[in-house]
Structure formats: structure tokens, C-alpha cells
Image (cartoon, rainbow, N blue to C red; front, side):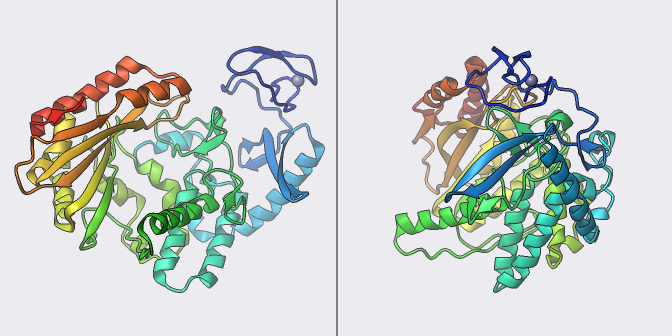
Length: 433
Ligand SMILES: [Zn+2]
């Protein structure tokens, strides 16, 4: 979008190259920084939030077309004004969203942007879309398990379909930011329609269609590799410390909080209110955002080690010899890695593989300089298998990733070496690395 005339055009040039606006002839630089100042006639979407531009999709000649409209477009202005009025009236019925967001870590940042109640987290168009979805789901589902699956899909979509999501210029998608310090930049906010889809083909990333399609793909994959699929769905919502785990688990993914943040609670805000809108989920009688923050498992808290051990012990009771546990974690210190790994050792797990994967997006706007995250795969052992070789895949992936975007290889290697040192010290292993 030209910051001078606000018209939108596509260019093959990328990354700081000078180009000329085909509409007004202005010389400009291609950048993902919010340098255009907001014109006063930009339509107000939410109180104090004005729109720059709109990406539209429409069905024509049996295919979906994509187009952009900037605020200089009179038709766009009229469309926004007309629909805003309608959606505002409809969203007034959603009582749960009038609740004031309680004070906790990082919420001051939201208050400064005038986000005080749950109503301010979503554009009215988004709220109405979620409300319509929840009404349809009520008529559609056969039992509570199905209902919870649809609720989880809504929660999954809500991380990208709210005002706390941010625009991700290199990928053209919205990503969750949730007001967590340094990750949420109001100027980068983009609103995604949660219902934007053609059947289950998502027309925008992170929509309800993408969330449901992921479940279907997983089910099809299992059918493909294992003959007849016996997959059924059970969603267990709750705190890993309290909820009973299934009796027998083949594969576990563990994604505990990491990084320097004191609290991840602000990341829960969009999920919390959308799940709460699915009002027959009884779990919300016992949870609110303050208690969620208080119960958060954070390596910065005193009782971290004990709670983390309880979870690994619960996992040990539910897993068998052929089960695998995949831990996603990153730390810049050997000490924290050791704290994370030790309960596995105590519970007779051994590491069998380490995979370096991208954990951060390619943007350098605000995200961490360390782009990688390590997946550590564990299996159970009851014999002394500690000398078994551990399969480590880091170097070749880092080299590949570097071809796609900027990456500080030395920094990644340094962080990786902390994990390898901790693995050696805790498990006394020999690596193929
Ligand atoms: Zn221009």
C-alpha cells in the first residue's frame, strides 16, 4: 500500500528496494514497518481502531478471486460502515464479552491500547461469526464429545481471529500475539474472518475451517498408515496437573511455557472468551483468567520443579514401552534444561532423538533472535539402555532453514549445545552428533 495515496498494488520487488507507486508516482521503499500515517477518514471498526485496507475474496467463474480495497475506495467505506452497524447490534447480545478483563501480567499493555473488556478483543464481524458458528454447532452435534471438539476448533481459530493477532508480512497471515510483552504491536493488527472458507478449504489462515481440516487430515493420515482407523475423539480440557490422563497413551506432545515471560495468561485471553461463549462447558465454572495465571506452570516459579515432576510421573503411568513422548522446549541455560530433563530420567524415560525445528516465524519485527526449538523424543526403558545412540538432527535442518530466511547459525548452535550438554550430564548418553 502506497503510504502517500493509500492505493494497493502488487510488485515483484522485495526487501527495501526503491519502487515507484504506479498511481501517484511517489518513490517508496518496500517495508513491513507501519510507516503510513492513518488518514482521518479511515472507517472506525472498533472504538479507536480504524481500517487501512481490506482483502476481499469472491467466487466467480467457478473459482475464488482475491482483491484488495484501500480506504480511498468509496465502495469499501460504505460496505464497512453498513456492516459495522449491523454487526455491532448483533454482538451486543453476546453478554459474556462485556466482562472486564482482570488485571494480570501484560494486561497494562492492552489497557494502554484501550482494550478493557472482552468485547474489545474482537472486531464485531468476528464476534458475530463466532456466535453464528456456536449456534450452528449446537444443532449439529450428536454428543458432548463432538461439541467440545467444535469448541476447541473455535478456540484454535480465535488465536488468529482477534485484534491481538498481528499481521505477518512475510507470510501474509495473522499470528497469535495475545498482548504478551514485545510481541503485540497494535499497528500490525489484521482482522481475519473466522468463517472465511469455501467448504472446509480455508480462505484465510487460522480460521475455523483450518482448525477442523487439521483434525480431518490427522484422521485420514491414520487411516492411510494403519488400515482401518479406530480413531475417536475425546477432548480433555483442563490443567495437566489435575485432570485424569487416559489409561494408555501412545504419543504425547509436551509444550511447556518457555522464554522470559512472567506470564502467558494474556495469550489465553482470546481462547478463554471464545470457549466461555460455548456456555455448556462446565469447566468454566471453576476457572477464570486470574486462576489460570496463578496455576500456570512457569520455570520462573518456585514450585515449578515439583509440578513438572508430577506431570512426568502421570505420563509415565499412562505410557508403555512403545509410547513416545515429544518434548518441545528451548532454553539458553544448561541448568534449566537439566531441570526439565531430570524428571524423565527419574521416571525411566530415555531420549532417543533430538530434532531442531523452526519455533519462531521469519519476521524480525519483535520475535526472539533464537529461531529454533528442539523436539526431544523419549521412550520408556526398564533395562540399562543408557548407552544407546541418540539420533540428533540439527545441523542439516539449520542449513536448510538458512536458505529460506535469515538465521544466526552460531547462536542456534550455541543454544543447541546447552541441550546436548544437559542431555549428556543427565542421561550419560553417547550421541551420533
Ligand atoms: Zn501512491
